Image 1 (tube, helix red, strand yellow):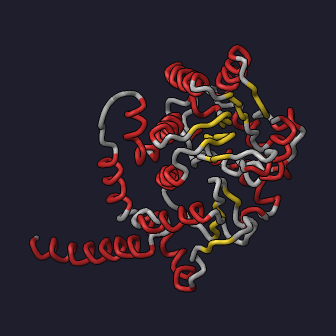
Image 2 (cartoon, helix red, strand yellow; image 1 turned 90 degrees about the vertical axis):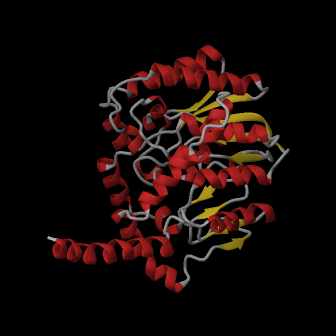
Image 3 (cartoon, one colour; image 1 turned 60 degrees about the horizontal axis):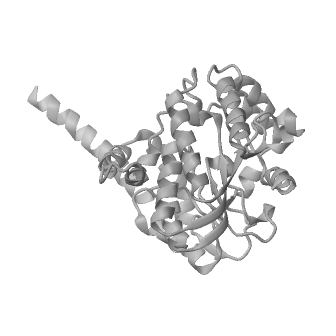
Length: 345
């Protein structure tokens, strides 16, 4: 029995050890390298775009971006999910803008990022809030907000609650993740070729994914030029994690959202609620989720009763959009977003 255990360990240890080593060294999501985020933020310090940007902790990036603009006033603050991340000064008339959108944004993210702004003396005249219906899904288990979670608790006056320890445990688990290993293996050729090296450039239009100084993004050419057949196929099958078990409307998350927006408004900012449309095919699928209709109804009613400006519609038909206006089932093309906002802001 002892020999068998030794034999098993002699196989398991090298396998998992090798996986962990590759995950750590290749690190396709740049979760183990603080210097990578610093290098990307350096673009904002120089007033330049940064291209060939890979995956990283967007929340920490946005935190550091806020710190770059300490004590500055902006005409517009943008908060929300990846569905707001292309919003830039392109759709404004000479106004300044700070985009703090993050992938899979939850209310906790919005509140934490606002708190970071507050602690850094950043003020804004208008707030564009990407109010996705899934903000009111109590079953959304995305925990990425925990990397800046201490600011969420600070906003609520809860003192020093440590969410980073739990986040660090997640990183330790991640290093042994087979899915992360799969991503690392795919990234090895590009890493060896040096094609993942970030570059500081003046124009945001590049081959690779680009971060602009205002925090907005410009997608990589490969994603921007996805064949329409693939875009539509994605709309048929995709289901973002925020839609998981979206079978009811959360009154608690409604309360948190309402109080937070009131706080923004009471700080002197004008509120603009951005209802970003979904791909026509996905929208029809999403309507079958019990939590979606009451969420959409609440957003519209809340904006009307509060007197806040509301732009867009989750239903693409309301805006005259077609399948060709989307990158995938969830994300609207930048040109389409710019057109809608330019017309309404």
